[in-house]
Image (tube, rainbow, N blue to C red; front, top):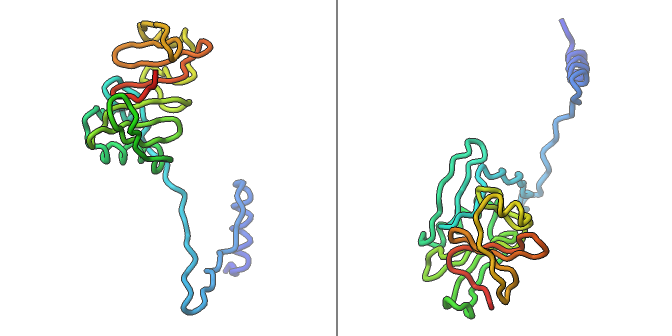
Length: 191
């Protein structure tokens, strides 16, 4: 018959041989009567979807299967914001209204360089000004002009914003030979 102490030692040796260590079970924290129990937080699960830019809205890409779901312009604003928030792992960093846009007042929500524009309660456009979501072709902020031209047939013209390019309903700016901004749909650019 194996004694309990020997069994624990044998388990510890077996785990150590596998590169793991045995730990004493943690005791439950004590709570004073009438006091609240300490909050426990689990890490947020990683999203199984990624956001990709599209001339007609956005695409949610399943990271495992590669299948996509389109979020076209015109969808209800709150529905789109919730789906993008789930894919971007959280609530937008900022929400507000810009009443000085050429298209009229636009509500917006931003996540790490991605801005979604909403008008009259509907998803109306997107803009990107930092590394983050890209087109399905891989083109995004930071891409070189050569990569951009390798993936899309673009037209370039000099505007007050700088060298401005367009292809298939997507617009952007080149700065020092790299994409610095992208947008599609309703935008709020000041020229």
